Length: 179
Picture 1 (tube, rainbow, N blue to C red):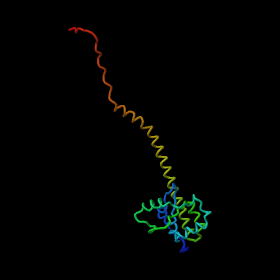
Picture 2 (cartoon, rainbow, N blue to C red):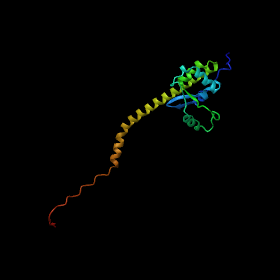
Picture 3 (cartoon, one colour):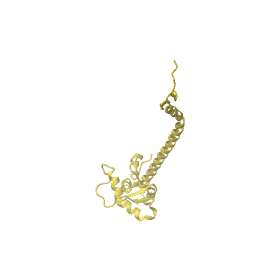
Picture 4 (cartoon, rainbow, N blue to C red):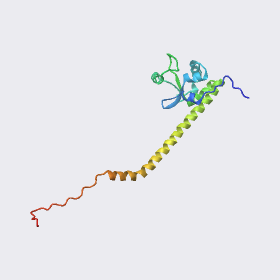
């Protein structure tokens, strides 16, 4: 029977999904949340990343602007990120999170990264399923729009006012009525 190492983690997909944000048109996780998941201090996580800067190009990681961080914090009634912070957090894309496993070598970091990668995959699958569903609905709308066009045309004809009957033409000139 296998026993779990105390350094490994079991984190639900829902918990991880709630820590994935959509910023700058991409799905990201914040350094603050990642540090919490890896059970390291945010400063230690960032130091490890900075020691390995070549592994984290701008499409893997970027620092939020003060405005982005303020907007993000304002979306939550209770901030889970604590009080005042001197520095705004970093955002890691899926590739950046994956790269973290090569920088943070603890068993916990490896297990958390595996779970995060699985969650990103599930999210991508859900989005793809929604795209397919949307495509099917649009195809049905087009199909049924054509079928119902006949009905709508018939209804429009019924709603149009009936043409007035022709009035007898008036004769011009002087006429005597013959009785």
